[in-house]
Amino acid sequence: MRAESLDTRLPAALASPPAAFRLLAVVAWLACGLAVAALIFPLASRSLRLSLRRFWAQTMLHALGVELHVEGTAIAPGALLVANHVSWLDILALASRTPAVFVAKSEVRRWPMIGWLAARAETVFIRRASGRSLLEVKNRIAGFLLDGRSVAMFPEATTSDGETVLPFRSGLLQAAVDADRALQAVAIAYRDERGRRSSSAAFIDGVSLCRSIVTVCSAGHIRACVAIAAPLAPAGRCRKLLARQARGAVAAMLGARN
Image 1 (tube, rainbow, N blue to C red):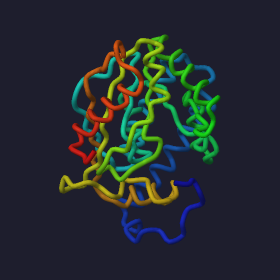
Image 2 (tube, rainbow, N blue to C red; image 1 turned 30 degrees about the vertical axis):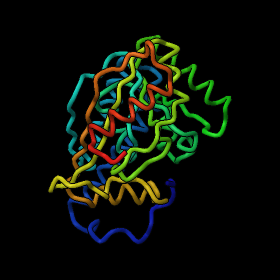
Image 3 (cartoon, rainbow, N blue to C red; image 1 turned 180 degrees about the vertical axis):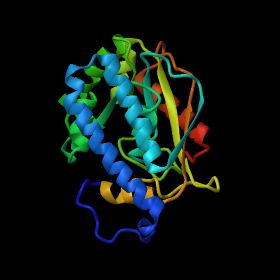
Image 4 (tube, one colour; image 1 turned 45 degrees about the horizontal axis):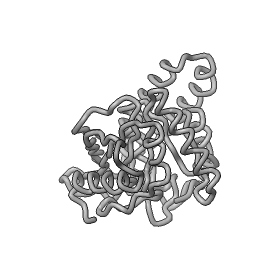
């Protein structure tokens, strides 16, 4: 999964007016987001920044032609949200519903434009191979939770095709235990116009970010389905138990193969 220059061998479907219009809308809205983050965020209150971020995510989904469907329990304030990871669309889907702080791998910070925008949106970046970074990020997450702010993360630590749920890494889930804040499992799936799993949304197998954006714009109809489980209280549960139970909840909501 890389952010690189746009592949010149674009899908033929991009030649269609709807696909081309989507791509132009995405580029325009990305530029708008960069301008807002640079010019307005430094002067805006936190509540205004969060409102603008949510509106931007909602509009970006619309520009991409992605319909969002959410079901299940409401997101509890100050909860640690743990979701399966299928695509970069996951972030837009969650950000359009909650003002949560996101946790991302440090490589995202180096992505052109996207990395800078993510940093301005308070994303916490983690160096996955560093124990010190893990501890620092865990403590930062706990601090956000104690302040009543939700945090969203993808404990599979990579993306999958959506048919299976990979094991959840438990290290950062210790933050919910330390802060004594609820954990909520979130299941994310993408469907096409026939209700089948949409392969166009998946961001796997070394596909570049630019290529993935073009594929999504060319896909026609994509429905992002988000299911939110009831909160899990950390009391009496260690981080590893929380990880197993959250993964089980996600797999059950998806009907996925464990």
